[in-house]
Amino acid sequence: MALLAAITIASLLQEAIYPPQINGQISMKPVKVFNAKTPRQRRKQEMGFLNFNMTADLTPLFTWNTKQLFLSLEAEYENAQGVNNTIVLWDRIVRRPEDARVNVVGAKNKYAFKEIGGKGFSKGAAGTASYALKYNLMSYVGMLRYGEAARLSDVSFDVREEL
Image (cartoon, rainbow, N blue to C red; front, side, top):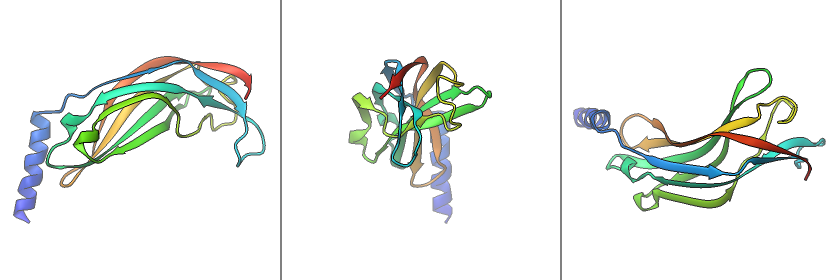
């Protein structure tokens, strides 16, 4: 048990003294917003669709103590009531250091991008959103670590009629 505690403390000290430097980049066009109907809803609602490119070198995060890495692309915006919303639009699990160089080209959002309040993007949400590539590092021993690899600010919503 003492050996496990010593390994945990050594791991935490290593991360505190030598924090990994992560470089990433996100690019995208304005988010297209259409009136669409999902299979589970009876009425149409404004939904956002985006195409993005993303590159990141996450190899510095992989050490002897790294089990896996959870990546997510999150949209952050403020609605008409002043509430800050964060929505996960895309995710990936990286289990091997060989897969830690992420190069995503022409990807679309994996999960629905909609304003939950029912007002939609044109009737109450802010005109822009910020996007961040975030990671959650799961280690064999020690705490979970969260971080941000890239950020893109002020991407506008392009509201259209119907899908």
